[in-house]
Image (cartoon, rainbow, N blue to C red):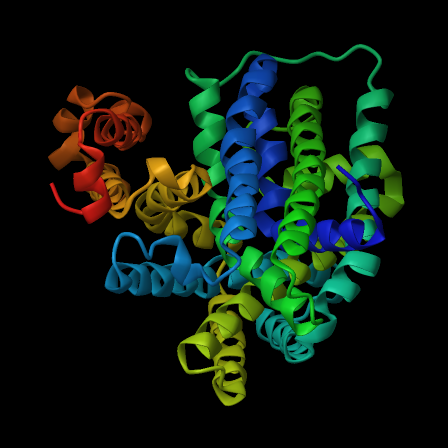
Amino acid sequence: MRFNKETFVAGFALFSMFFGAGNLMLPPLLGFKAGDAWLMVIMGFVISAVIIPLLGIFAHARLQGTMLDFAKKVSPTFSLIYCVLVYLISIALPSPRTASVTHEMAIQPFFGTSAWMTSTIYFALVLLFVLNRSKILSILGKFLSPIIFIVVLSIICIGIFSVLTPEIGPSEFQTPIVSGLLEGYQTFDAIGAVVVGGVIIVSLKIKGENNFDRNRSLIMRSGILAGIGLFIIYAGMIYSGALFGSDFDENINRTDLLSGLSLKTLGSVGEIFLSILVGLACFTTAVGIVTGTADFMKGLFGGSQKVYLITAIIGCILGVLMGQFDVHYIINVAVPALMFIYPITIILILLNVLPDRFTSSLVFRSVVVVTILFSIPDFLGSIGLSDLVSSLLKILPLGVYSLAWLLPALTTLVIMNVFVPKSSKSKGTL
């Protein structure tokens, strides 16, 4: 597999669009709580925040269409509803969260300005980049992403090699792998894969790259590079959090821990480096989300540039409004949405990377319907109705781990391929 300059540019661009607010803030605290179980936590986190998103990029490379293609085998109506929900969640939660994190960690400590001013200027710059979307791959891949990667890697390496006799405490988690996997939901990386993967495809087409096989190879290779970068950063940040666990108060929050780690590793200049890192990482993610949403709406309305402009403006305005909330509040609000949409997204990604002979329309519909049904108890529990579903979740396999949908979905996939006649599957009926 050959990695040329174009592959590295696209790979860094993908990495930058994935690597945002949650990607910076979540791993250190996860490692801090993981203690001596940090390796198990890394395994769980990597599944939901690296492997599944990478499969999402592979699915895009295979389809080379729009996000509507991800669920078209279920039904056109379902595909449209799913896509609209994903884009609404994306511009209402992870995109504004990037502005909130930037304000709390990169702007307010130095300038004392209001969140309104920060988010207004922030999303004005996002809009500028989105409206110049033909240059996105080049700007993100050649300039911003390498800076992000180098700064984070510096924090990790200095931290690891500066601790001669690490004192890692016991873990707070009873099931470290599951805790890591569920925390990986909050990165939004699986959803990000189906959103920003489309951005890469549209960007390639704008550049005149229409060779299917060449684009597939480029997208897959760049996805692998982005996945390697994410793995290095996630694993390093989780281990750093565990390594310095005894140096911080047990009730420390995400932002304070990240700031403390940068101060201990990079010294007095650490705060400045961290501010630059936070601003860049968050900004590139916001650009990817708003661009992806605008591309989708433009495609729905026959390629209308006016729709692209209107969507981009609305996305940025929503970012300004939601960006006023505290980042921890946004993370908590996101949990119910993630508990519902994430299982569907994961299953759609898995189905789209499997060979066509295993994924007829009937298989798609059956597996997705089962996933939705068995994710409802987890969703109800996340919105405060745990008393209604607690007994049910205890009965369902993996229900107590908020993964009640997983085994039923996989079982349905196997049953539909083993026991249902091929003629029925090809017709899409039982």
